Length: 224
Image (cartoon, rainbow, N blue to C red):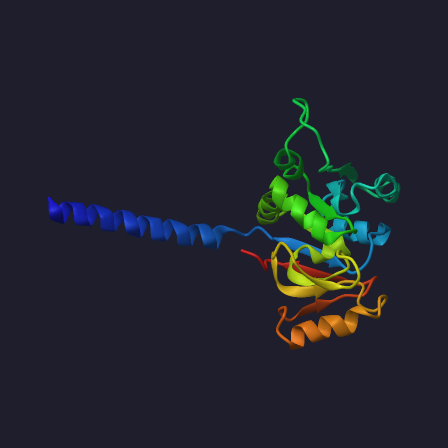
């Protein structure tokens, strides 16, 4: 009986190991993050549309960092109006209602998710409190394009330089989808460069990527 039990357990172990390897080898989903150094614009959105490889993709904008500024939301729809996409907005300042979908139900039906600029620190706190960070990770692994500018660029990295606190620029811990640091607005806001470089040289943050306002960086399959 002991010998049979050992053979059965060993066989199950080999099956689990083989199944795990097969799953890894057959996972061909391209996982994409597009980080833009400045605020969103029509060219940026059109590039994200192209990344989806669909004729009229569902694109969701999350304006949490701006506290859902109505002017920014209107600007989002204005930018999307001439483009080949179906625009949505995911609000996070919500009240319970039986007729609304969960964050996961809304976001996982999108082809791309764009995070807007504003206060990165506050936005990250809301994402974690609402479980949106976990939903975004699921979206990434599903192959939904993740993108954003300014705070919406910084949020995908491990850490970076932010103006989210009073008085001076400081270091912030972010979602960590990209295991590196980041500094948006690198050339347009001159005080960022020395602070970012010093933080890297003194090992306060990981080496990383600086980005100008009108530049973007494309990352694929960098987060497992």
